Length: 301
Image 1 (spheres, rainbow, N blue to C red):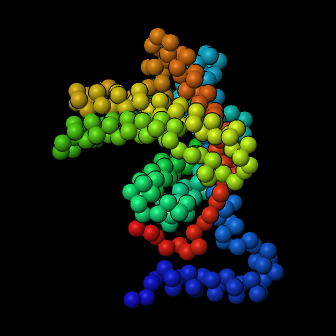
Image 2: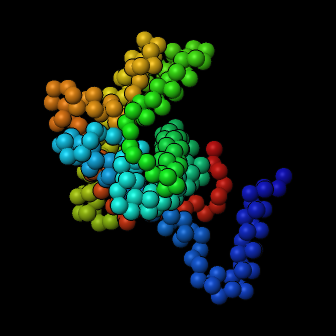
Image 3: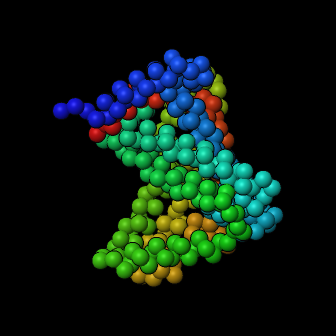
């Protein structure tokens, strides 16, 4: 049985060759592999910009230099209100869209050659979920480009409670909400575990000395991301246990709740610095990461 993907690739290749022969402009266009690599590097840079922005905004909020702490989407809202905000949202949306494309190549087409072992499939599954989350952020950035508005933390809480209410209305909704909270908790713990077990230099094309210097940024960043998920996870689990949507809150509001506790300002401040470290490491990945686009766009099991 003929492979439709292979047939489509052959037709596109022939069309591209014909176009290059007829047009000098098309002959200057880099090959697809190079374009995909550029897109991936732009995507890592966009992720770095987002996390660097979130970290600084949360840090400034902790120091009472701006309003309340906000999550990732709240940070985009805040940035859209600054000078050239719409331009930043357009560039951020395009960069995150490029990163989503790279996540698809990693998860579906195994661009990182993780294979089909249990560990490899687990890594690719996490890359797929990561791509979905960044697709949501890209959509939010494009929405703010078309019409920026003032950030309102209560809107994030309301959206989270509406989603919780939807789950509770389903059969076994209480258990579904509990499972959602445990999944968020698992993501947080997974980030912390990854910080200590992952060899982040494996994917970097830089000297041993430089890799030794920059990989601590990745470890600090993953610990911060993991710890930031835990307060939200606890609140969602409690909401499922009590079957009360009022217990559900947003990412930013959960950080605010931590900030109000004893030594909470220090904890949130350290998490914010961890976000800054993760953003800095994403910029390093944009420059030095080994980008290996798959030779064939053939989905692997």
